[in-house]
Image (tube, rainbow, N blue to C red; front, side, top):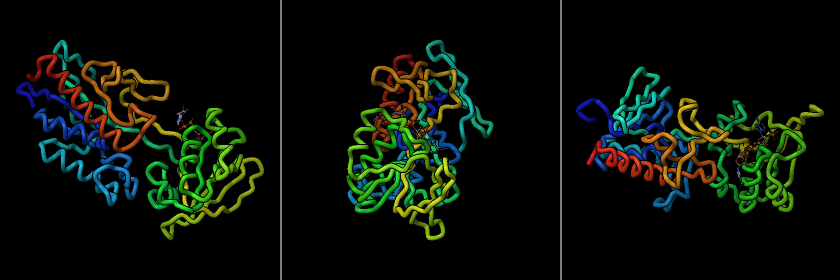
Length: 320
Ligand code: NAP
């Protein structure tokens, strides 16, 4: 904290992007505060084993990885606050007007820079059984979990590009992939549709929704109950895994109208940096990336945001 009570940097979010920004800014002696949210750790808290994060040859549990990142940030002095940000009052650091970051705990943080790393949330079907089986056969990320389904049967829910991409990726491991879509036409781009139609492992179940996932009692997926939305007919389909690919929603509600976003609410960053439309506000991780969406890419952009924030503070003379 500076003498005037204004922080150098406030980091919002505690997934791989937020904690990596915390590690880098803390090591740069910027005394960051990380506002972690009331459900800290981000999407990796919803997964079990992570096999593709470099440095863990035997894999690492998602929640453990996030705890290591938090401890690493704290080791260098990052302060972690378990509250949600509800609003940012824009400032103008170039004119020495700080930003004001407000939490649902009633706290206000004045700061010369902000790193937004609030991530995106996968949209879910909203079933009770789905909640219980996430990380136990229900997944929102084929890249993360596909390899656990070698020679197994899986279903993918959704009809957009994400669903086609997930289905195609899963054919590398699974013995069969059934795409369940609520209409009889895909939303996905033609090229992705064609690739999926051509793949012999992929088949489609049209006009159908998942009504239930079994078996929550056993703690693993054995099948889904499908309902045909036209005939109302229900039937049971055996499967070992359910991949939900019905879209993501970036967590940017509190920034609406303040920072430039695309039509889906993802923050727009400039010129391959993490700089947003507001000088002094940086964005890292899934909140600005709907293409890669990996823990390692999020961590990488958290590092970039920390370096961008540090250079910004130097350029306006807050630090030397
Ligand atoms: P999306 O285009 O919004 O598609 C979501 C799909 O899920 C739609 O087919 C939708 O059905 C279905 N859906 C939504 N809510 C549902 C529910 N509650 N129950 C059952 N089905 C539901 O999302 P996305 O596929 O994640 O793509 C998002 C953006 O990223 C798109 O612009 C896409 O082109 C882009 N993207 C591109 C690539 C690529 O080019 N390789 C890869 C991934 C994503 P309806 O069709 O009936 O609405």
